[in-house]
Amino acid sequence: MIRPSVLLFALLMSAPALYRYVLDEVDITEVLIRFVIAVPIAALLLAGLRFVTAGYGRPEGKPEGTPVTPSPMDEPGKPA
Image (tube, rainbow, N blue to C red; front, side):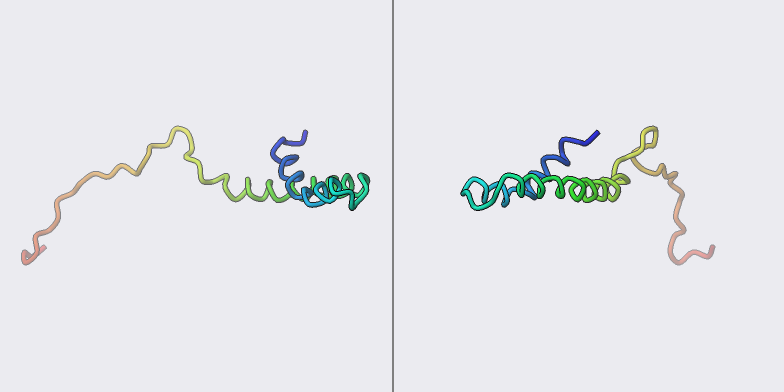
């Protein structure tokens, strides 16, 4: 099933053709062809974006940070 975000992005990419149709400069078939071509391109671009940003979320069950146990530091000037 095609995601609504893909259809919206494809509509935005084919918006200039739709605008030219409103101005009666192109035929409706050309507008629909451009929209049909824009759908797989939008799907690939958004899939790539989802792939890149998939690792940015915090996995469930993991703590917010790495637990650290404090240890005393050596004093400067004292031999170890």
